[in-house]
Length: 515
Ligand code: BGC
Image 1: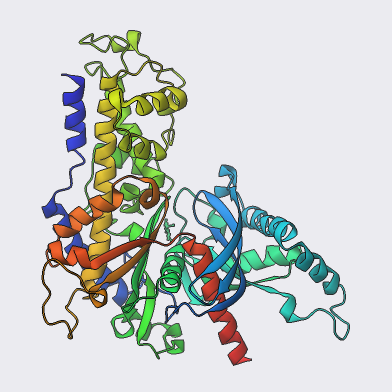
Image 2 (image 1 turned 60 degrees about the vertical axis):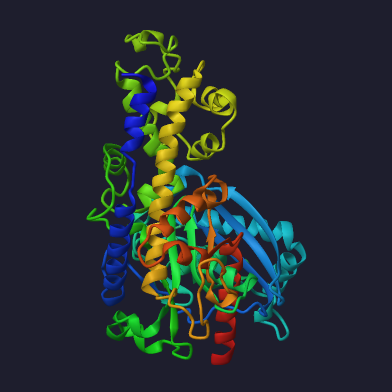
């Protein structure tokens, strides 16, 4: 079989038709409802106790930290109160060994040290005066609460939230695995390590990155209709949206339900859609998805995430390529690249290529090939050479790789549309506003807009990710071409930092009004 023909066959395994999208959306809505009714459903639908989104007038200086993907970020955010903010940040890659540390203390003390470094570097005066004043805590006029930074903790894993700065870890995702932390209050774990270093910081709010994204988008682009959804398509994937309180039926049956602020009649729900359809009733399943899952740290969970997000797409592609490389009938990366069947003696693939290692192929490679349309796919070939030990990839090799990579990326985007479409339909946001007499097919009024904030490396860097999502939304019953035009998708850059600051601000207000 010719190389391109074989590549097309493999690419076809990733096709996700309009019919699949529609089936997916229906099931997504069903599982959303199930999650709102009971705890322990596949889609957790976690109540966040955040009952309002900001309007852009919020002000103050806050700190935020963000743990949840490849990097740990520490930042301070000055909210100016006019929908703008200034942000200072530092970022470190989280060492792989800490993601699977023996004890949670190892990870959390590392985080506290990063906060200390940040304070020394960017708020040196505050840091030293506070440490000095701490020594005077027992004297009148000594250390006071005002010296303390309120910190929003963006912790992007499924957490059972029981208060604005209290929540227990349900399970790890995205390659983290520290069993000792499961069931513990992650705010307390961080606060203990902050206190051990005597830092002037109080963990005031616990925030999922999707909630932060939704808050940040609402702060920076307050519109007539408000933002409906904050979604992350990065290392992992997830979404948080504004739900009607009376639809969150399980609140009535839980102990905490009584404490809910009912003024807005709404609450932000963290869907944890990464675990949509873990039972695979509608999700596509190729041999590459199956082996990826079987060899992951959490087989059988986050099945939707494992088909969509940046942590996994490179690995799916790698597995598809390895199957071809190992097939003596398929001349991929063969030096002669002809009909020569004896690939192994003529391969241009180094024996120690990262392609042979689990996680060896980075998802950024999918973005690189998707963006490469130059003659002979030179950039793809260069990357294969530099990063993946393929010394003389032919342009046919590069085309074969690009075909499969695009199929994996496109399927991910169409699955992302299932989640977005599901939420837009479940919340009935496309029902025409009463005061709009005619909804013609061409123009969209400002009050017809359904606003969505997104963040993450895939939406930001994968060319056409949004366009593929839009194509699938147009194919979705109940949305169609006009509905798709009404959906505005905007990047909420630094969403998790600003969003966490905004929630820390709300928490501060609540604490002061309770005092
Ligand atoms: C986590 C979510 C998070 C998402 C995006 C998922 O693996 O379970 O809590 O929002 O990744 O970071």
